Image 1 (cartoon, protein in one colour):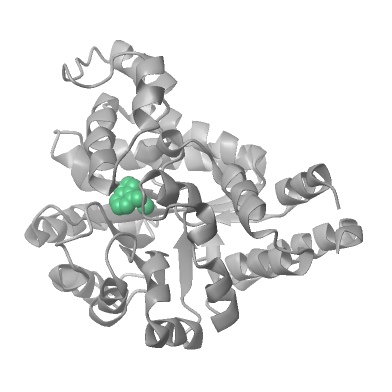
Image 2 (tube, protein in one colour):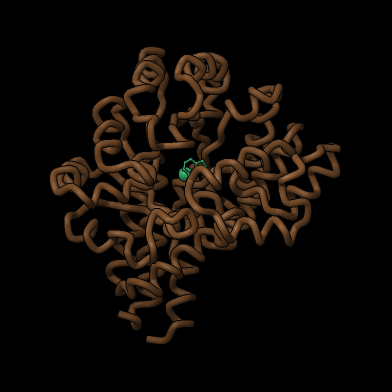
Length: 351
Ligand code: HPA
Ligand SMILES: [Zn+2]
């Protein structure tokens, strides 16, 4: 089979994105535009041009080094329209990459602490979702993440502030992100438990096992009772953790280019995807912060193919697992599964 045949197959393969931070889709171009539009002066040490930003983004040394730029970058997002533009631009790109369903993260605390109203953030994103759903037939969900470097009492305050957006169905998931090491999941036990007690129909996930070891994954499962694990690559260091993830069919939302750029692995080939397949741990492939890590979801699929050379059947299995692990109803799953079957038929000569 030729590379270009496989590229077309990967492009057409229906994808579900489960791990993308909308603030991480802020391209250097949009960042500079919004800084001008909103009259924002970035700190002296922040790269001042598009070229300088791309150059700096190619040299992250670890998660924290990236986060330091990510939080400064998002300071240009002020008005509802900024959030709408940001999110819509991502959906356009996702659609071009063959994404049929996207569950996107945002970081409410990172905006609230700058004096931005949660209503402006959520309504901007919601407008973009509505337009994208109508323009592209894509389905989308919005997940709010608590920031783990901020005291967990603030996560509770934020949860309460978000209740109106949860009851309207504009936010349907809870996640946990930011600096992992030193901020284990149990610190957020009360925030997750409170969300459940509010008896809201929410889905739960958390970043774990990106830089932290497998105990962070176990903490997310035991203390936060999450249904999915974001990243989770360090689960592979512990047999019992892998067996538990497989037994519970817990999806890992893996982000290959992110892991490489933030030096969680030396090569994409070192991400334990074969081990996950061997143990029956489902995973999806995602972009995380595509504007910062040099590639969107299709680039991540292609990088994985370059390093793992999975056969057609394995890619079909990955696509089906993505659908089963999505927070969508059975009817939508059936539609997406049928599309995967069509693409399989079209490309069966690659098998
Ligand atoms: O990759 C990430 N890890 C943790 N927090 C984040 N916030 C945005 N991206 C990330
Ligand atoms: Zn992430």
